[in-house]
Length: 73
Image (cartoon, rainbow, N blue to C red):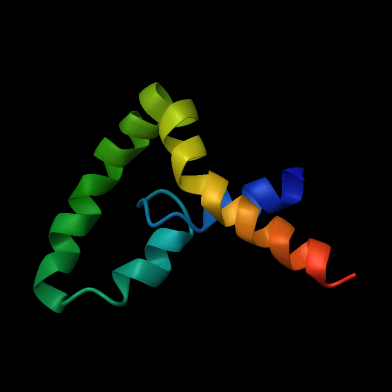
């Protein structure tokens, strides 16, 4: 359960996380510098509002993982 949570959390498209590198390559070239500047802001937002915001975003992803795990047995 912890590993699934960490995997889903790490794929969020917020600049300090790994998901941001995937999302960054899908952005138009003109938007990349602005997206990079938002990195420090998203880090502070995760630190201050992290628990509630992250749980809202990650809950559907974990539900999807649980659905797949339960039906694969």
